[in-house]
Image (cartoon, rainbow, N blue to C red):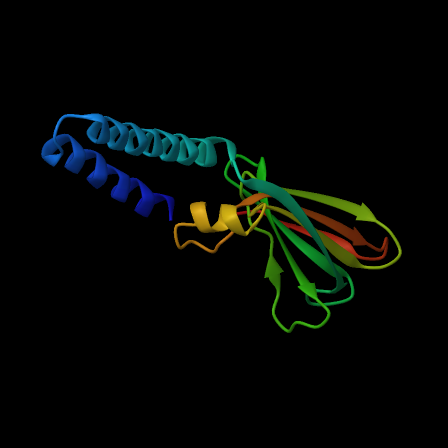
Length: 166
């Protein structure tokens, strides 16, 4: 919406500068359309750099874990690159296929021991504060940007974590 407003204000500004006769109407039209252009560009820059009109929302999802292959093999950890990044393969009780954590700069994983075998996935995303901000800045993009994702694995002491070397 703000892009459409900027395009319209640019056409009005150019039209007033080219076709309007010198006088009060021309000055007022160019002044108002120039302020709309400057304000729209400033709002776009603030939204892009500082997430203006947005706030962070955190959602937590808890899923029960099942062993990957046998009762002894609970999780499979594979180191990537120099070893500071890793991928953890796990299986949720209700799923038939194994899931994997995403190795990104926004992802952190922790392994703890405890009674229920579960994974807690905490995802923080940017969302628009209100409908007006969504109309102005969404630009047709309905996906939310992920700020951070944290996986907290709680596994019993009887389960083992397999480390795969590549």
